Image (cartoon, rainbow, N blue to C red; front, side, top):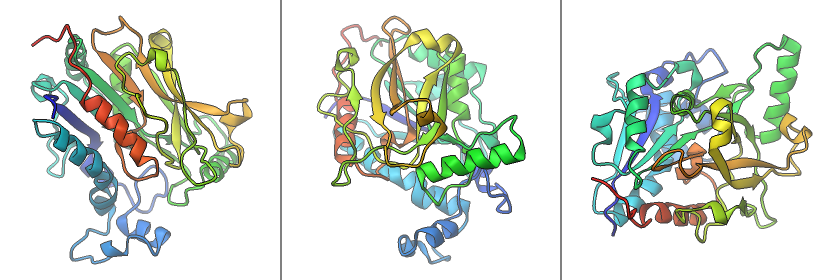
Length: 330
């Protein structure tokens, strides 16, 4: 058991996600009913409409958020404190900002930026200041975790947009996704406000081994100053994972800890057409940027949705059981 205090902040607006118009295919989560139809015969245990909301709310509760239960349960078993879980805007529509009150007593913050860009979630000046103050403690650790941004086609003609979105859709191969689906507005604005801007690009299909397990990633262990990747060799095989690209003032402030191979058998993607065979899957702020440490990775790093869970569980353990900083402050 450790004395760590872990908080998981789901940066979505539940009402904003649930109220997406079902008449529009793009930029929304699927309804639970749609997931059941597309993935049949899976998920039939969720078919009773008297027990399970068959709309988008049901997808959020019974599929998306449920995939974080393994991480939360494991962490609860390893710490002397309960794991704090909160939605930015819950079902009642009342916001819970990421402020000083929320962060009091926390030493490890995980921001799951699975918020649809359509809902306009953005970090306020007060929230940015609170996280900046949080990172003044050398013992504090922050993960900011957007998911993919697929099918972004600003400034293109209709025919160009259709070609780009179809190509990206065929590359990742997940028929449950719409042609355009962007996440991570809260995470992006938080990083930009902290002076370490990063964009979550695309949704790339990761490589697998012949036995179906994830291909081991490329890791720069010399840069892993907290030992978070000790005995960790893979992340997961979620079908669409973003490349994390520092931009603006973030370019000089990050090291790439992990690069994950792209499936060479997947249909072509504009990113692979540029000669890339891997994507940057985990970034870490360089020493001296903050007293604490900030990392950027995918929202599915904490999910049991795809394979590779055993290695991820080691990653989670390393985070929770990392040694206390010699310079830890109250």
